[in-house]
Length: 304
Image (cartoon, rainbow, N blue to C red; front, side, top):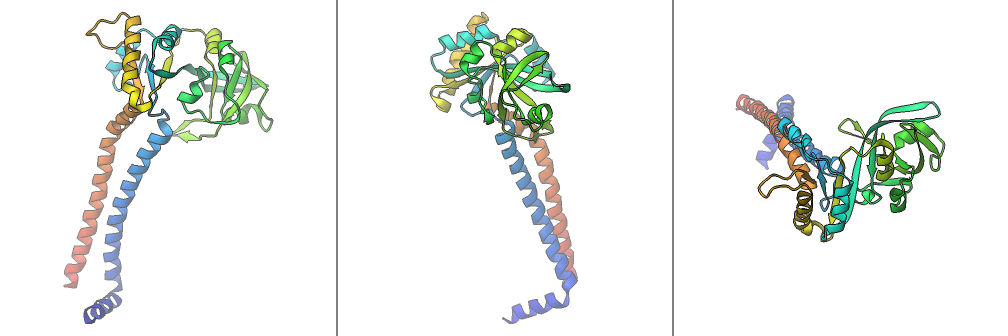
């Protein structure tokens, strides 16, 4: 009790010294906690919001994940994945549950004198909403029949709704996509911006209609969900690999003339890119701990 009494008396008499000591501890610990929290938060944000691909879905594409200039030039030389490849996978893949397709690009839309440039257009099959986890706020997604017959319909983002239609309900109303009239059948949920990219300036249209109106030269991505879920990913990828390689007459020892994209691969690329940045942040936060320790040491030496 006498020791505690002396300590309390010392704290009271030397308020500035006590404050500086506490400040050194608080700053050092707070910096470490803040940096770790930021790193964990960014990783979680990237995994849940940016990489929206489900862990039980993979995509076969011409380009895949490009991490270097050499990989890009190699991917450009590959044969594009087309609708015939999609039909072959649907017909011959026994372990494929849901098989969707996606293409598209940035295009201009117009209505009643209002024009929006660079709108992201996703042209896909009717089951794209399943493999890509599309959230609808109002209306509905297009059906298999609408996709098969090339119906001129669209599911638009909230920015398109606000800019083109204002306070008017857009469902059932039309607008022009590069001169082609489309009818709005659904509105996407508001997503905001991700890493500076607006996620509400986009739309989904049937792939058949898009191909007929704007050409079939674009390569498509084939999204596949195995019948056995995550446990059947490798088996399903091997089967799709055999189908696509056989259609391209690829030699036994040659590389795949296409690429697979998975949620795990996307997160691995993100971790490799961010590892150095996170290491630098941790180092900087460690410096604050050292500085805090020096401050405390100096104060204790003066006290002694």
